Length: 500
Image (cartoon, rainbow, N blue to C red; front, side, top):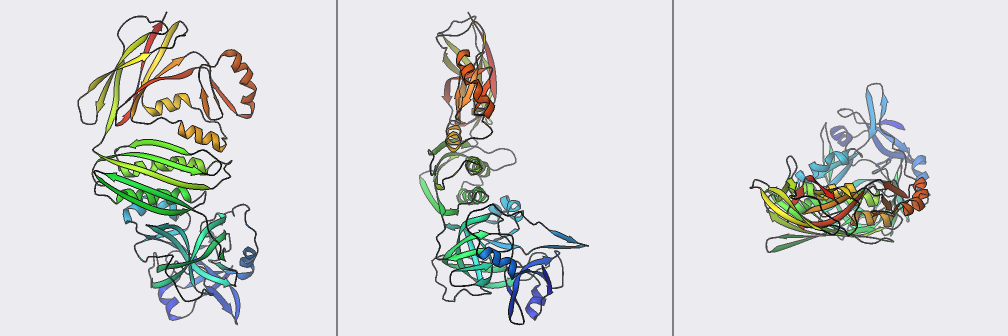
């Protein structure tokens, strides 16, 4: 690192501000490097660290692919802290409340969220050419809302540019739209100085995000994941469309905040509302993920935020899968807003009568309590299998989470088909389920649960346990029946019956 004091009245007035990263520094007419580091948080002196251009040029000829860089973190020098200059992350079309819900996750990556100051249009022409000192933006989300990270170009030739002098997202190889940008104003502040930026026309794609620079290639096309959200409230329908960068480290977070903002843009957001969500995810080389779930208000968390986090769970599993090879193709959400807190708790379950026989139909009585409502009972007929061992059998009256826990024990490493099969096998949380527990082995193979496995078959499958392709339990959970409730069901009760 080259340590320098900046000159000029503007630098003395504003200090080192977010968005300056990548500003070219010349010594005797020769490019020395990029302004990239600041000293401390409240320093009044415009002292900064410069990334030498030789280190940046190593990124210029770096091929695609490879492993992500190791984050450098902060450097301690006495009482001064040297850190990369924050990259302003401009949120256009977002509320402060939505950004605050996920702010800590962005700041942990060295990104400074800025809401509502500036805007963008990737189709708006900007006649000025990109040259050293020009602002450039990485467009992480585009469409009905936009998220862009902005820094300054250091080196430019006819094919590519180098910018920032430090990583933006620390993800190594990537594919992100690159746009021109114009600086509207610089806001000085001893705590958080930054630039107000408008993004303009798309001119290529950023393909490398490395320790000493980010690299953009002119004319390159970035892969984005199209997301559509169709929101139903009463008789009205509101569509929202946006594209998100395809990155294992960034996509789930960017989708979460964008979907949360989409759900906040309706009149029922502040009221107690329950959401019915159908989520479909298409990914190359794997079956479609198709899930339906309910999200209701809970103490301490708005229903919209809870619904958003539910939507994000499968995305995290898909992106975190080490066997994923294909790109995410699309995400589609269909969301119905239902007035009120639609929740039901299973308080009790019982059966009257004595011993039963295999093949009988028994009646269970479940006591259910709606939110702020009177308890009610539901009779659930249960047809027993034609073959059952003599002795006690347990019937579990429960919510979806309990059934998923009893029937599924995911392997440590799943391929994509197994991951999708496991996701699609999860139970919808708006039903009361009856599950029978029998003293017979249960196996999980290729993302699917095999109940009541004969001992002879269990012995044949046993060698697969060595490579974790198979998991085995000593008790089987057999789904018997379920009853729809049109509300989020919670709780579980056990009824024991005697089979003769």
